[in-house]
Length: 341
Ligand code: DAH
Image (cartoon, rainbow, N blue to C red; front, side):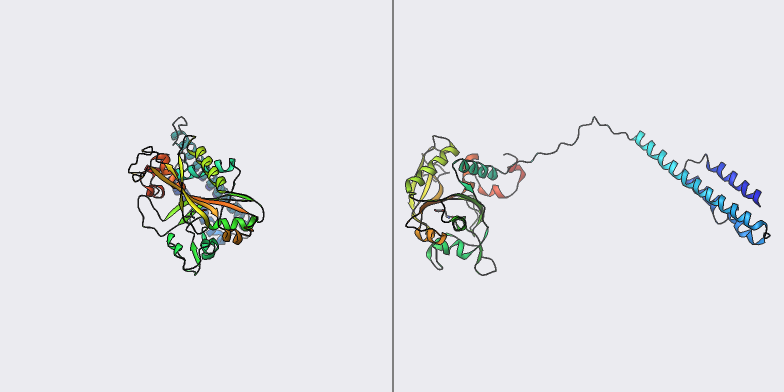
C-alpha cells in the first residue's frame, strides 16, 4: 500500500509539471484528488488493512494528499503570474499617446463682474458682507420703513414661503439692518452682495432671480455730495475715466432724498437706440440718504449720524460690458453661451 502511495505521488507530480492550461489542470485535479482517484481509494481501503499497517499508511496518505494540494496551489499561482506577465507584454501601455485634455473651468460672467465690483469697493475702503437670502417680512420691509399694506410694497412682487412672515428677499437692502445692528454705534462702509428673488414676468430684461450689490455708508456728517462722489468714483474705476453719469430724483421708502443713477448708453453714445429705449441713458442703481427711521431701526441716533445707501444690479453691468441682448442667458446654464467668457 505504501508503494502504491509513492507511485501515486510520483505520477501525479510528474503529470502536473508540464500543465499550462486551465482545462488539463481541472482534469488533473479530478484524476488525482477527486472522489474516484487512486489516492482516495487508499483512504477507502483503510478498513481492510491490518492494525500494524494502518497508522503508517494513513499518515503517508494524508501527507501525499497535502503535498498534491500544495503542488496544485503552487501551479495555480504560477499560471496566474504567467498570464499576468503575458497580458502586460501583449497590452503594453503607450505612454507617448496624448492624454485626454482636462477641460479648464471658468468663472461665470456675472461672477467676474461681482469680483470686479468687490475689488473696487475694497480699494475704496468698503468691507464685503454676506447676508441671508431667506428673510422675514420685518427685515425685508418693516424695518426699512415699509409697513404692512403700505402702497410702496407694490414695488416688490414677492415670493412668500409657506411659513407666514418668511419670504425670499426681494432686494439686498435688509442686509443694511443686519450690518447696522452688528456695528452700531461705529461708522460703516459696507458692501452687501447677493441673490434676490421677485415674482416677475420673465423677459429679456427681467428674471425672477438676480444679484444685487447693496452699499451702506454711515458716519457723522455724511452728505449727498459724498454719495455722488463715491458712486461717480466707483463707476469711473469700473468703466473707465471717461464715463458719463447722471442722477435723477426718485422715491424709495428707506431713503430721503432718494434717487437713481444712470450711465450714458454705451451702444449709441447718448443719441438714443434700442438698448436705451431711445433715451440715451441706462439705469444703474437706486440710492439715497438713509431715512432717519431706518437709522433708528439699525441702532443709530439720526441726530448724530447720517448715511447713504445704494443698490445696484450687477447683471445690468455684465450685460453692458459684453453686449448681451437677453438677461435670461445668464441663468440658463447653456455652455455655448458660458464658454464665450
Ligand atoms: N432696494 C432697492 C431695490 O431693490 C434699491 C435701492 C434703492 C437700494 C435705494 C438702496 C437705496 O440702498 O438707497 O429696488
